[in-house]
Amino acid sequence: MYKIGCCIPGGSFMPQGVSSTADAGQALIARVQTVLDTGFDFAESTVGNVMALTEDELDTVIGKGIRLPVCNSFIPPTFSIMKRDTGLEAYVDESMRRMMMLGTDTVVLGSGGARRIPEGMSHGEGISIFKDFLTMCNGYGKKYGITVAIEPLNHKECNLLNRVGESYLLAKELGLDNVQLLADAYHMAVENEPHSTLKCYTDMLCHVHVSQADRAYPGKNAEDKYIPAFIQSLKESGYQGRITVECGFDDFESNALVASAYLKKIL
View 1 (cartoon, rainbow, N blue to C red):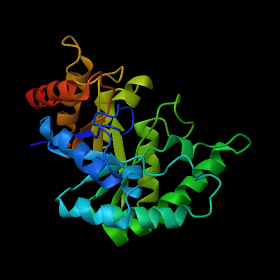
View 2: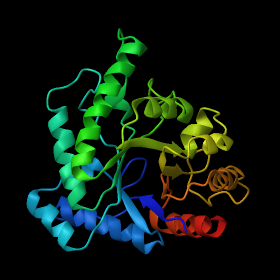
View 3: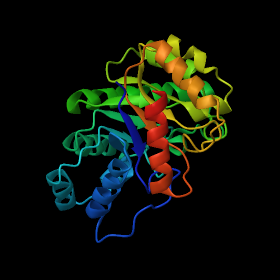
């Protein structure tokens, strides 16, 4: 049976969803609980939320039994992977240490701002630098038991690795144990990448993001054909991993209840 999660309120593409709290730890606890209360099996957080915690807040979150099996938005746009920014490796080390403490086994590497190839740099050079970065991440992934999932981002959001197919070839070429692949229904729709190709990537696919083709929440449009077709292709591929809702919401709590019920019905 699939485990279905949702990106927490306040994360990428989502409204705040909960009232402000005294500190980052209490805010994270409240947001995770909101996701679980709307019928999802787990919450997916940005790495930024984890890095915002003080050590005391981190201990409090752990003490409350909060676990984040998957995190996303791995590298903030304040870093440039392409420029090999000083401090980037230390950030990877520390963020993975914290994620490990919160039970994370997968971190999604979208981070379009951080991985964007700057003007004047060739695509070949950008790919080479990105490979070096992934190799470095693989080492820390082994240390902390975390897999980095490369997220293909559509061409409107990033100029490096826009399609699942090309990201798959890169991951296969590298052959790193702790670097695998994510498929996102929205990005595949923007790139006109057929979801029927998912069966070609199952050996590297470790996580999935889902939304309607326009990035609305699952179940918003009763006539939507895209999500059912995407899910059917996912089933036919043999994928058995986690699926996270990453989308826009009008009102998080009411919409999330619809989304979780809808996905459980079609899965």
